[in-house]
Length: 192
Ligand SMILES: [Zn+2]
Image (cartoon, rainbow, N blue to C red; front, side, top):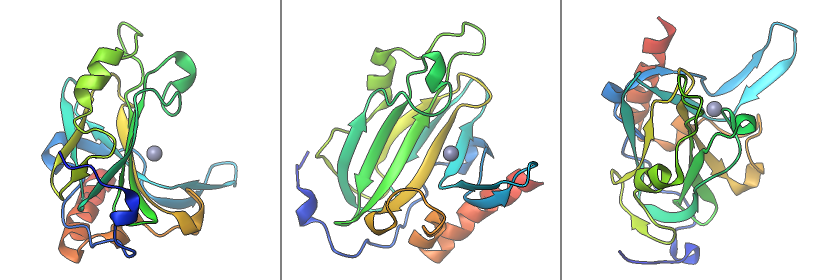
């Protein structure tokens, strides 16, 4: 493991060459990236792509480009069932000085036992350490299925947009075109 600092990273992010997950392990896209008008006529925005594992299975997530692990948070207290004691976790990979790839593992609570994942399991599901250098395609983390809503919220943050705002570009724009097509194909599967 080679530690490196964010200042060693390039100014411009490299083009992402690897999918964040294996389409074979993803049952559906829970929520797509983008803006829409809800049933009450209110404008909504979702800043990432939600990848849901199959019932009873796990899905592994991967670095999409070379980078450095900037964040490992073993209990964000946010997202799915965050208000019901869920233990959700986050990994962020910095791929340039100002761009981070964010994976929020929203496990939720078990649909039968109503219990969250344990901290031991969380630690076992996080395959990288803060400060570690990763290569495109390296395994970084695993999400288990706990309920129908379990998913990884995958997004790409450029500091200049100040978080997940409607001005941010789609995560697809960071990928090599043939890889972006594969991601789009997953989206189409979900639509049909
Ligand atoms: Zn999401």
